Image (cartoon, rainbow, N blue to C red; front, top):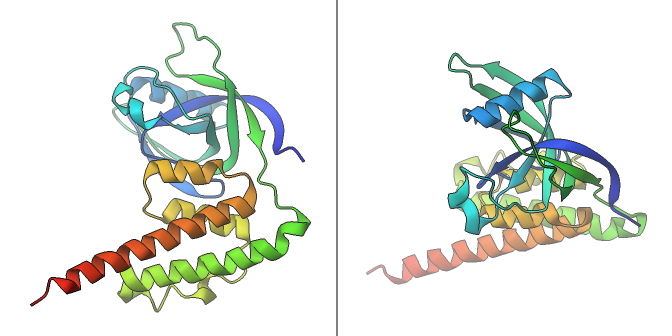
Length: 225
């Protein structure tokens, strides 16, 4: 079964350290002239922008058109505040993943990049449901355990009961957004094919983080006299 749906053209907002996921909201401050123009055009149209990450080896080339990852996330401007200096504060609500097919040439009047993209589904087949539900429970267990380690003062509020009724896709995207992971790791999670794979990778990232914390704590304790 294909994970692609339809095609469209999106304005691109490349950033080196932000990965947007479907269903989550990200506040953004728009100040560069090209992205002011992009935001104004989006607000005058369908309000959609394609968030896309810059390849890490090219983050020093942000002033130009650095190479991008092929998979990003389309978002709609849910809130906008024009600023006196011509910039904007916006809140972008993630809609759906996309893959870049090609970037058309632009004329001198358009400062920002656009791309023809194909929208991507997040497959969740019926036969995967037992495994997905198992992973859903495991991710909740790992996340609440991580909270007990890193923010014990919040452990009483962040319990498994807090996540009851949250669908696996929503849970995975929300936690991918919230977790303090390197942008490259988040990009890998965004590129996961379907809900099951994203939950598997998310569980692996949570397990690694818990093991890392346990190791650091053990090293700290061993140096005490």
